Every structure is written in structure tokens, then in C-alpha cells.
Amino acid sequence: EGKIVTIGEILVEIMATTLGHGFLEAQTLIGPFPSGAPAIFIDQVGKLGHPAAIVSAVGDDDFGTVNLDRLKQDGVDVSAVAIHPGAATGSAFVRYRPDGGRDFVFNMRDSAAGRIDATPEAQAVLAEAGHLHVMGSGLPVPAVFGMVSASIPAIKARGGTVSFDPNIRVEMLRDPAGKAAFQTVLAATDLFLPSGEELSLFSGEADEGRAIAALLDAGVQEIVLKRGKAGASHFDRNGRTDVPGFVVEEIDPTGAGDSFGATFLVARRLGKPVEDCLRYANAAGARTVTVKGPMEGTSSFAELDAFIAATPVGAA
Ligand code: ATP
Image 1: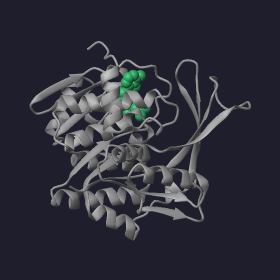
Image 2 (image 1 turned 120 degrees about the vertical axis):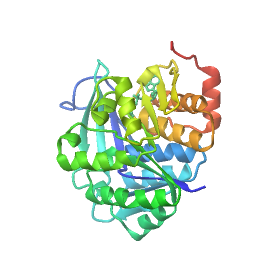
Image 3 (image 1 turned 135 degrees about the horizontal axis):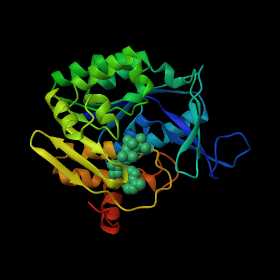
Image 4 (image 1 turned 90 degrees about the vertical axis):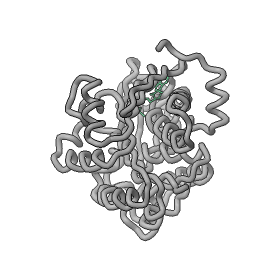
């Protein structure tokens, strides 16, 4: 069984411990926490014991080391993470607003993540991938899109599969090149993992049923719609399956979608029934939101089983 491989940014997150707006006055901050949507995703794959690798780049600094140490500890192959002596690992500062919104300051300009490249190590990892998970957040980096588009036909030719979490910032779709990149990936996607308005953005249909039908007609095999605390729904040619979410106190929503997607994918690859895959994925997402820090709530199967046994489920 081949590795699950993803490509994209690694960064650290540093968060304010008080509610408020922005960073215009001094804050009490905690961190650095390992972060970056692709990093959270692949950490969760590793925690579940599935072979995992990430293609990325960090700076030669503590923020890079804190990420590499965590990923290695959780079983992720980081041989294709380049260490750039001339660039810093990026960082994101986050503050939560009283209404549940978030304010960010990103220090990603010229960071190592923008220098992800098709190194020999990256090509070696991609050449043996059994599954490629594409995250939209990384696609604006031309070398990332280049590796994604070159790898997809090769992986499919050897019987592998592709999943896609659009993870979108709407600006990316306004750019014609960005939109074309997303369409290229979508056309090759076996498992599509949208949340909220991403379903209509990608299908061009406002109505949920029509959006699903359009995507299945376009060749997507399976769609899993993430519904936040309401749980998730799975769609394929045979119909739909809805599983409600778990009732938890949300402390920090960052990373829920990434650990959800990783867990659904691994459970599915292990041959579990769709309903069990959704339950495990909902549990992984719910555990993630109960902890401060994007990657601090990733889970093993034993942790998910214990959580499922102990946690009430919301109304369907
Ligand atoms: P993000 O971009 O913040 O990582 P997302 O928008 O991709 O997340 P969500 O639907 O917010 O995806 O969350 C993914 C999954 O995590 C949900 O389908 C659900 O299973 C779980 N989840 C998220 N928030 C909550 C919550 N408040 N309570 C329980 N489960 C949650």
C-alpha cells in the first residue's frame, strides 16, 4: 500500500490568549504551534498509522525544527521537506474575536513555503505515492501546481487515487490562472472534500443537490461535504449518507477540516463502511476544535474510539 502524500506550506501559529480585535495593542501570546493546512492533514494521517509523506520547505530555524520534529514523531516521512538556509519558516499570528471570528497577521511573504520546489527528494516521494491529497492553499505557488499536475496522471496510471480539499481563499478563483488550476485538479479528483460555499463555487450550482449531481457528472467519484458542528455528508452515485457531528465546546476551530479529511481518507483506504469513515472523521474534527493549536488535537484511532464512546452526538 503506497503512501498518502501531500504538497504545501508548513508554518507556525502564534495565538493571543485574550479575545479582542486585531493586534494594535500588546498581547499575551502562546506558541509556536506547528501549522499549515497540508502539515495538519499529513500529521493526522501519520497519527492514524498510515504511511505518510509531505513535500514542503522550511527555513533553517527553530520554527522549521518544531514542525519537522512533530511530523517525524507522528510518523510522517519528511525526507522531501527542503531546509532553506536563506529563507525563514513562515508564521501566522491569530486573535479570536468575541463573535467567534478571527484576525490574522501572516508573515509568509518570501517565506520558505514560497520556495517549495521539485527537488530530487520531492520527485522520489511523489514517484512512489499511492494517493495524492491536493490542498488548494498551496496551488498558487507555481512549482506546487507544477508538481500536482505532473503527478496526477502518473499516480492514476499506477492505480493510485487523488483527493482534493479546495481550502479556498475566494481571491484565488477570481484569478483566471487560479481558476484553471482548480478545474484541472477537480477533473482528476476521486474524493472531493468541500465545506460551506465551496460546493457551489466549484460546481456553479447554488442548490446542494444540483451541485452534487454536477460534480458526480464531471467525474468526481465521492464527495464529502463538511458541515461544521452539524457533521458531514457523503455522496456518490449510489446515494447519500449523513452523519451528525459530536457535541463539544469549540476552543479553536483551526485544523478541523484538515484532520477531518485525513481521517476520512485513511478510514476509507482501510475499507471501512462510509458511515464509520464519517463518524471517525467527525470525531477527528471535533477533537481538533477542543484544543488550542491547529495540530495539537490530531488523533490516533485509539483516541478516536475513546472519544466516540464518551461524546454525545448532535441532532441529525
Ligand atoms: P477549517 O477550514 O476550519 O479547518 P473546514 O471549514 O474545512 O474547517 P468544518 O466543517 O468547519 O471544515 O469542520 C470540519 C469537520 O470538523 C466538521 O465536518 C465536523 O465533523 C468537525 N467540526 C468542526 N467544528 C466543529 C464543532 N464546533 N463541533 C463539533 N464538530 C466540529
